[in-house]
Image (tube, each protein chain N blue to C red):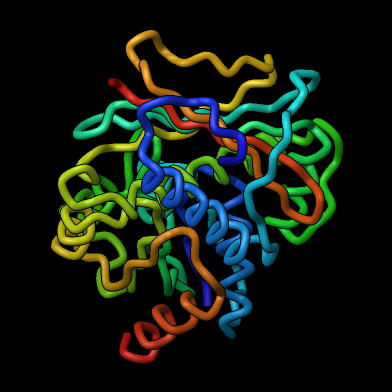
Length: 156
Length: 129
């Protein structure tokens, strides 16, 4: 399976993530987007983080290089953005929000009883999860050759 | 028509405004708020306007005051009564939808969304209003 670095995460959850990412890019950016086998360098990486709390405790991260984040922001906004434009961080945060929300909406009714936080966006390149999240999963996606990553982590 | 868009993301406020215009709404002015408290202030200030706000679009998950708290405060203060409110949010679970409707929302759209979905759910509200 492409990019599967985690354990104890069901294929069903992964398929839901693929579907959620695809829907966000198709509907909001008018771009097709699918999983690829790749890695995202830590240099100039922008990371957005959403936390789940409730029936599911965990986090969803979306991370991309500055360049890919800027391309995604432009596609979302339909306008050109400038390097280090705060709208780029905002756009990555909102993509994370929609992917996390879309993933949550595809859960069973009992699992879906959880709250999602507002996104927090950093440029420090870190992808660390809280210690209690023993199960993590990283997956890379590409739209028009632009690669970004999504990570999910859960309390075991 | 004047509209009020409430979302903590400036990007989403722009995306929603674009979707409303694509839906055919002729927006003469778009007021923006990044949370429910700012939105309440905007409605209080707009109370005597000759051209009142005709549509409110709100996110739910926001800092300071969320969209559901905004709806309930708006109802309690009797602000912008009769103005259609559409929620556009990632929170699509039934408890959120029911609470939003109970607090006065007439429309509910889940992110991600298409311009066609916005058109289909917003325009009928404006024709009725």
